[in-house]
Amino acid sequence: MSDPVFSISRLGWDESLAIAFAPFRERGMSAGRVAVQDKHHYVIFAETGELLARIAGKLFHDSCGDAALPKVGDWVAFKHAPGDAKAVIHAVLPRRTKLCRKFSGRETEEQILVTNIDIAFIVLALDETFNARLLERFLSMVHEGGARPVIVLNKTDLCSDLDAYMTATELSAGGAPVVAVSAKTRKALKQLLEYITPTSTVTFIGKSGVGKSTLVNKLYGEAIQPTVEVRAIDSKGRHTTTWRELIVLPNGGLVIDTPGMREFQLWMAGEGIHEAFPDIELLAVQCRFRECSHTQEKDCAVKLALVKGTLSQERFNNFAKLRQELAFLGQTRLYHQPFGRGASETDKRKKSARKKWRYTDTDSGEDD
Image 1: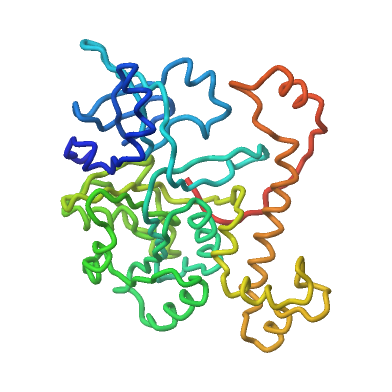
Image 2: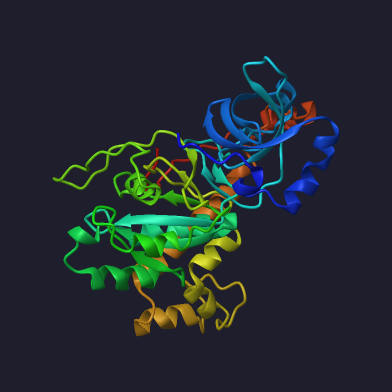
């Protein structure tokens, strides 16, 4: 782990957080930021330095699911008595932004990956793994969580047709900035660093092997994150980052490196999917019917754009697939609410009385 500057103002602390923390300060607590999470054990950065921490039993039992527990990037209220080996986290302060997805498997529960980030760098490699459809999924997640997406095309040193990749990316980017870099040759890394300002927090997300940890190392200036080469035969990546970690860069910015994603199922995206497909949204307002499904209705501007070729069939198919996936998730979520810790007995009885729906996950994205 890097050696951070232990000043909470340097870690992104601001007035809104100070207001939210005031009641806990009155109870003798201190504020810190989660840097590493290992199940229910944590490393937090605070004014007093780097501390090992655990969550209080009350916080654990009162939480209504995993999403309510501290995650990397969270600001927390904690107590640390002199002589104690670990600090105790009593509360999680309100989150400004988050990146989340649905837990893999049949349960419809939110899994929060990182919190309180300003920019999410969506990293794609310029090789056989490049996937514009997966990019659109990531964009939906980033927009929904409230962060700003920046698309990073890595491995330009291995790419023979950068213009073609740039064109394909910009068609799916929805207006998000696109930066082509090479972690190996350091091409355009200065341009990338311009997005990481002091006290701001960024994260790198993407499939395994796209070069996220190598980019973090280059931005930091030394090998702080382990890396390995991808398999040359199929460009498949091997996991090097196995946990999420908050790192303080020499320029004062903060970065959270994340494991590669082998599976990525959307959570409850509302505006996120609309912001990821602004071209389709713009066409949709021209449709005759307000709730047009863009399938059988008359005077559909989206269908007309498909016929004219101004909207690609692949992009529309992905939009329709994501929209259907979210609608299905919204329905099944009613039957799979995570009533556990903190749930009332009435809620638990309702849970047991519900019909058990079965469904099959068809997402072929990627994750840790």
